[in-house]
Length: 120
Length: 108
Image 1 (cartoon, each protein chain N blue to C red):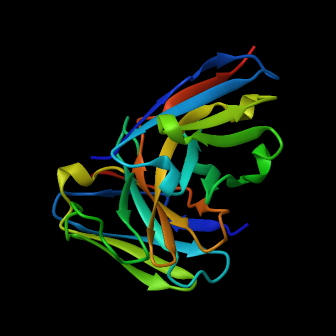
Image 2: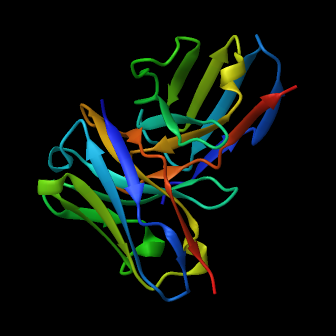
């Protein structure tokens, strides 16, 4: 059974930093695409970042240069390092396992989410 | 970026009703379209991938169709568990994915 458990959320001041962790079980993070998706309070879903094939990654435009996705294969962990945080980054951040069917990619499994609040 | 527009933004329906939600991308995306269900207070759940494929465990009353610039999610015989918000998402853009704004289905 696939399980994803996020941690590291909390309250941070604008301009501050925070690192989210996602502990995966039931599969290996090194063998699949992994992604972060966020949801601002009362709003819809927004893809944030993806990591794939080694250390290749991509980011949503508004977080480029501020966020960094990485993974620790030995511990089966996914990370999201967030710097220079803005109030607009306030959201629940979901860790997701990306499923694949031929050329199709989709967010197949989701964690319960970690709340990040950016406020002074 | 590919913009995803869902309609309606919300709807009210009764148990047993047939419900249809539409998703229109700003450009053609072949069949690279997924649907998610999010119940209040819960994480989203994959409902349909690749336009019309159901993951294991998703009831057959959910059906997805379409291609290019128009897609639909149909729920036949709405059940109490189906009152939720539904999101479409395109995976056509190479690793730059976008979601629709969501459609909230509530009880009439």
